[in-house]
Length: 347
Image 1 (cartoon, rainbow, N blue to C red):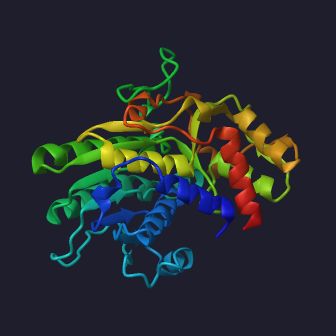
Image 2 (image 1 turned 180 degrees about the vertical axis):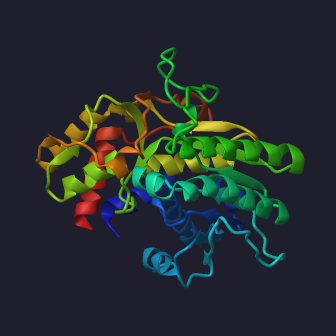
């Protein structure tokens, strides 16, 4: 494993949160092979070496993919890969204890939104419902639903930063709205299970996340820029680049996720964001091009990409609420990009 990645894992493993809540417990993670989930597993398995003794169930559809990613953990008594499609009801032995359930599985990039719009919606609604039922059945201590900055929609022009109560415009009668609306519905399902079933739930809202654990199939703009950069190619910008968004490096995102899981209040949503991660798309492209020693070129997007793009022009999230729980961003956008590129180039 790359030295920078080990350093990031050590950083998250050393944050000041009540780790004792996970001591000798179990955690069930859907989407465990993704950008966020795989890094979270790395952190927890590192903590297990230090005596956390937390059993980790990682849910994914592809066993081979899981084994390749988690080869070093595959035979550990604290790791178990569960091959399952979250759109199907999940059945496990009733005597299996599941203390924490994290739903991280979701389509999260433009080509997936446009080529698998049904799967995008169903994973965030049917998959969430299936996992909530599972959490209730196994008497989970807490359920965490990984939501998104996209629940806020378009900025109405009345605020600079979105707090957790903000609600912007979403045109629901579009294919692209499937992701945003289904994430909203997933949050509503969590509230319903909290009220009707007494389930303890928290909702971490992730910004546009990036880092060395990103999947090479990811088609988000930042991921495409990074892939071009580490290949020594010019960065391709497919718009004017004036979109102004919040971004979070994977280590900071997972630190925020764990803070919400172990310190958040039941029923509450928390933005994982900081101003140090905010940047316009054209400036983001410039940071990556500068680090790669290449330049920026402009192209029109292909149709399959275009229909999957967000139409939101400004989405900066307020992290004030999460900071009150003790979280802070370690890596600003420039440092996070440089670490990501350096790690991937070495890999």
